[in-house]
Image 1 (cartoon, helix red, strand yellow):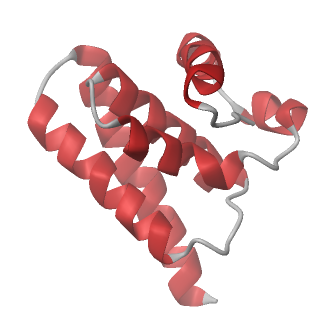
Image 2 (tube, rainbow, N blue to C red):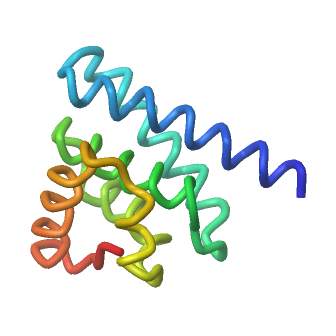
Length: 117
């Protein structure tokens, strides 16, 4: 649907801003508020499994939350919709700059019992 597509592009764009802020360590409070909004939005769509650009955006948001010392519940909530995705497919869609953050999430996932794609 058009609403779902618009929501997905909004998540991708918003996640990119939060990711950038976390990378640069600027606007921490605003970036954390942003990822928490993405998590709430995702919670409302809880039956949907993320895919493509939206899945990558959720993983980037989860890393931003982790990097900004956000709540682990929010980090897990952002990672959850990607848990059933094929990890090879997700990895092939990610940029080289995603590798280190994804490794950090993968390390954190067993610590918090939340799988990473």
